[in-house]
Image 1 (spheres, rainbow, N blue to C red):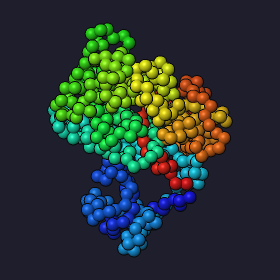
Image 2 (image 1 turned 90 degrees about the vertical axis):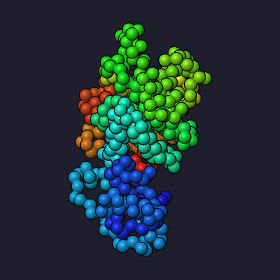
Image 3 (image 1 turned 135 degrees about the vertical axis):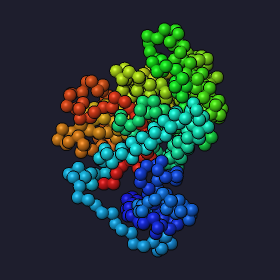
Length: 420
């Protein structure tokens, strides 16, 4: 087994080519595709110095021999005397990690992506070229973050990250891109998929707010007004000069495989693959995060609904891949384990969906010290069934705090567990 890397800190002025460094502060706070990388040029060192950082973390054992010889002795990280929770996290077995350590980085990245998407939407009307450039930058960062790693963990985030419009745009973008990745799409298609999924609802800004989400009570005129957001979005796509692939997503993200969608009633053979991906992901997020929170269903119910009641509306291969990637118990599902304990699914690894990461109810442990259990590493323990939050005992419901609004982000599966 490969030993765990040790991180020390070093002054930026002392960096040399060949060092493996780790940048903090969020994936959008620096221009590099990854937060952990081996320095390969003097230009990268110059860029690091331009960021105003005094010290960075690095892994001496992973550095090139020449870099280690040139580097001065690094100052060790000073460990503060922490709380009971801090000590518990340090002593936790490899199968458990503190929730804050697992989620803080992803929540920060989701928040930064949501802020970036808001800047896109704010510029669309008056500055379409700037909006396109901002959307391209965000899409490129998401695509680059997904590159080069086989397994991804889809993580449940806190519900307070970003407003609803931006959260929906980022949710649909993230899951759509993960779907595209699972199909092995090339870079051009991935960038088109990211742009189209991010901007799929951009036309809603042109219609009154009360008509931006379809309601069962809408009359024909109100329904037509709601459906007009697609045409409005296409107008924005033309002004932004989006690619054909991205534009088709805006045009077709409400078309269904059986021809029951709008605005043109197109069937599968007349829609693009990218649009069919976004159509499904958009439907899933709208089930979990409707305009009226009282109508929300659990992620498990949403997957079951799409598979049993709406399967004719979606491409069979895409629906199958979606369920395989999200799992029967997607992040956000409330479950009961085979030992009768209650838990909240907080992370699903794409290749091991039946054994996700769960936050387990334990009345002996304070909620802010609760551990996340990786069912993949625990023999003989699994999930018995999915539950509605309303069926939980009051104390369990308060402890697990199921989200009323689901936000998702992702991390390479190997990076989501904090050091033991």
